[in-house]
Length: 335
Image (cartoon, rainbow, N blue to C red; front, side):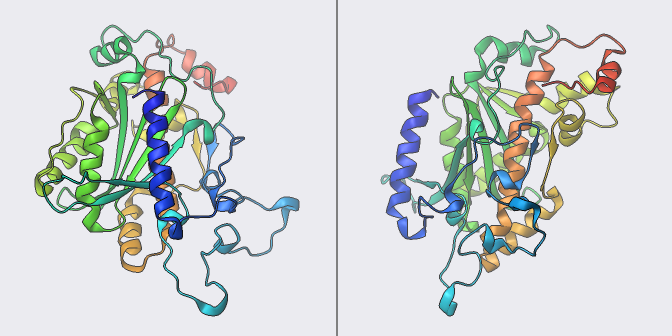
């Protein structure tokens, strides 16, 4: 996808959002503002909710979520107006085409650029010459990063349960474009799968972390249930297996967040443990408390961003034996 495609989708999302203006945040609302001066290494929930850190002056008075998310508490007069996730993460809908052979549906799409989350880096969009013994890395580098779609799923557990959030990222030649496809209730899983299938078209490489074991088989199983034709890109690069070959003897384990912390030198703030995510989604569907889902979107987005940093690190020449420890002592991590 190129810049024009991204711009066209943003226009489309804007049009769809305006049609649902009764559910959108006003443009001058604090919840609709994105920060562009955020720190690069530590990324917390405050990146999504401006003002979620300590207030100016260091006041320690008790502050509720309604301070940062207007409408999150009970509004004056005790109104119980329904508030959806759109109020917190503005975006638009992807809808089935009018000639869809079945009952058409919709799924919510939240989009933003990586440069809206952290300061742009000169190396974005570039990869070093990868090791010759890693054919997956070699093929992706040869085709160019524009041909890669990064993917991470949030699900309700086993393959017989729902996938409710799919985070994707791709390089458009100028910036990384992040899109999160969200099923606002269980009935939107089918449209989510169809939207994701459409998003995959045109890419030659799918990049995941443990996707061969989990993400892709999960998607295929759910696609069968919903009778959705899902055709992932022809080449699948699972970073977990490459990372194990590269760092097995250096790291205690090769979990994504271990590599994120030890190799990519990133640390998370305000993250939610993965085992709590299914419960948070079920709670949202049952009670409709969207603010509880913001950390889930945050978790999913950081997983996708970290994949691109891991990919870049895997394409860098391996340091000489002992150089990694010396670099750690000097505090100079891989950027």
